[in-house]
Length: 494
Image (cartoon, rainbow, N blue to C red; front, side, top):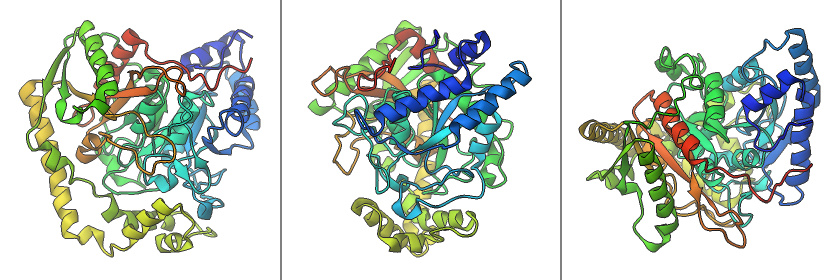
């Protein structure tokens, strides 16, 4: 067989199906072999919580369907997908990384999971994460600490770090993440991947364990821009369970993937937001990569404009609403789970005291807020969010910018054992609701623990429903720079 699993793309897999060089069963067997070799053995990434016990049975069904329909199947036919384990699945538990929730079995798929299956994908398993997505180092009471396959002494970002590590290590082709602060984009940055935080209303949060009514989003994580765009195509849509998706109706193009333009940077004006770039010695490694990103964009015909926003820092520090909304949001999730669940309320969950100390402390602070939606600070922060949206939009208008550029994290991703992920910039998107795409920008210098260097991600942001433009700009950069390299810790098995 000529097919190579590592770094495989959707287009490459589908070409192998058409030529007869590959079946879905063979593809899934390869993914399962990599999980067996590298998730608890070898580098012991601890990226996975659950592997679908019926994955090979499902793969055989998809092969039979392919033969019966003579290849006329869905756009994600046979593609293995790993879900962050806060996406509900009707056939596997959804734990949020929690010992207390390890036997929680939803009655139905999350809306996005349903859409992904309808597109023909195979759900290979559920990924480890920062417990209940509350934090950025990807450690949980059920799954332990996820390690970064590029540097086994470091975290993979978070909270969707299990998904990030799994996709970087070619355990599957596509992954999903949720993003309250920067939880899709942090592991994309740390694992040399593409992550998309969509505009509020474009993708349903229905059936995804929540942190916030206002900040939560769900989106794709992939190794290439086109694969991320193909998964986004499958995920978008109106969901009555998440009425905010009514705002997205009519907004997506026919296909984000089909619209990708390798010349999108030609004539584009990209603004580097200097408020989000560090100026100390500890920032030098990231800044070096960002300078190269800008040079590459300019070589592709873009104009890069450096700018700062007066008043930005004080405003951006006071836009987070999640701790005021968490209690009500989680109780709404529990109410929709169905009967016979091990935990049925946020209060009961907190009282189990099974979470790791840092997560337990966070949840106890959340539940102590009796009526967060009526809190004066909450109302002030909602106003700040509107003010930040206007500040950013006005700057883009004044400077005639197509997108804003910045590093997702101003320093290298944190080492394992730390409780916090420092100096991340994801709040620009979560604080405004504007969409953002993170993509591989480069690597730090190689070291003893990071033989290829540590991945460093760049991010592009623009106004509501500009995902097509952002993806095309990231695609144009990707095609010109060819940054991504597979991690050395998880080499081919054959």
